[in-house]
Length: 114
Length: 115
Image (cartoon, rainbow over all chains, first blue to last red; front, side):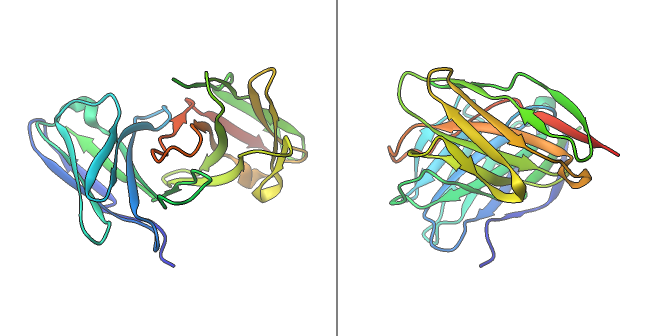
């Protein structure tokens, strides 16, 4: 079992650019959540995808958008990048019918905005 | 709404000494509680979780935590730490099975084990 995988590992962009991050969930999982972890902070919930739709969203602007594909993999898109978007972006997967709320996290994508 | 407070941003401790990392939460509904560890440049690894039942929860790597409903706390403990336990530790809460699985994290506690 490969677990949750994310790509790329690191990314450097400049202000105003757009970026796409990718996530493949753990085998058997159908739900993907995205979190932003700024330096020295805990992860903050961005949004969650289930059945190819955004099911819940945290307090993030519309510049942050996502997508889930039929194979349950997911993308996070950020438009008009700001310096403050520099962070570790974590993807977590879970099984919708699971009863214990457990999410499995990937290694993250480190985004640096210059 | 839920919130999590980790009272200590950094905890230095000597090797083989015991350690306690504190976590308090606020919620108007019952919650599930989690502790995660993050090693440098890595993602989050689950240490342990409290869903229901016994208030003393044992996890991996010799860690345990105790759920105290009256004090709304979920402190993490280890009787004897190793150098390899140096990492960032996050406490998190999640509402009961509702289909959303949204986690609320604390700001983390950096555990530094000294030789």
